[in-house]
Length: 223
Image 1 (cartoon, rainbow, N blue to C red):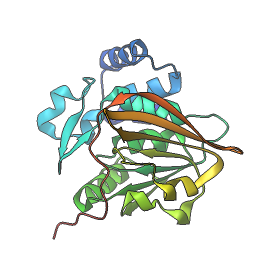
Image 2: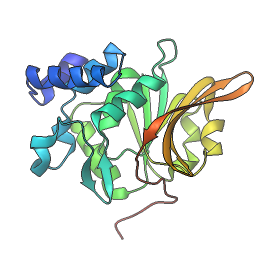
Image 3: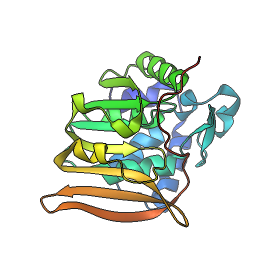
């Protein structure tokens, strides 16, 4: 799928896309490719129809199972932080959720592996993204702390739930120049953090305050 196909999926008006794009720029997003993707992706297809009228507001929205779809700004920010033109082949996403962030990653990376611990969300997002025509995504039901070493090493790993500490198994699955973006719990709340793998070890950069659902262990089935 390309950007023009994505724009046509939901028939999102040009005015709505332009307004969201302008808001992302005002909030500090600089990567034009990321802005174009986030403002063009039909976000209303990833949420309950009762919330369609709020789909293009810059807010998080509930998707059931005590989970949310992140606000467009956060999706754009996290995507911008892992975007490196020379290293966009293989990405791991922890927390598929609605599949909205997954769809953005699918447009940027050659291969996407996405892990969801809640079976109902895993099934729904897999069905949704497959119907929308995304073909370069591998879907895994599992514990995100463990990653998925079969598809490693990853150029980038994005975690969409707040971890208590940096999951060591995810670090091990990074490429030699890979990067991780994740919300991390700290004494006074949560911070969005970027970790960059280098010859000298991980370089850590704190980006900004955020609020995410907690990163939990195990699998939550329907039984």
